[in-house]
Length: 92
Image 1 (tube, rainbow, N blue to C red):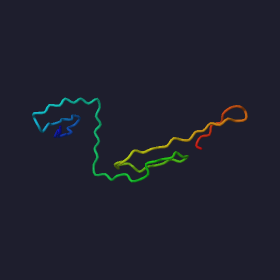
Image 2: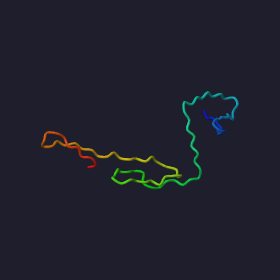
Image 3: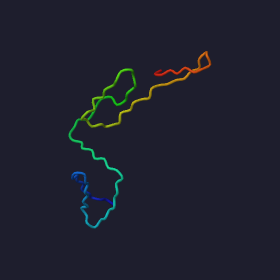
Image 4: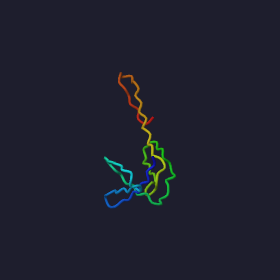
C-alpha cells in the first residue's frame, strides 16, 4: 500500500493530512526530532579521528554530514613488569 501524506510543521505541533480521505492511520510517536536542513554545503573533510595529544577540529558547523564521525579508541596495553605487577601503556 502506498500512502500519500503531507507533513507540515506549525510551531510545536505536527499535523498530518491524508490526501486520501478513505484511509485511516493511527500513529503515536514516543519522541520526535525535527531537523531543519537548508541549502548548507556538505562537510567534505576527514570523518575518522585518531586521538592524539593535540585537539582536532572538524569544521562541520553549519554543514550537512553524509556519514558519522568515528573517533578511534586510544590503544591501551598491559604488560607484566619485573616487580611482579603490571605496567599500563597508553597510546601505543
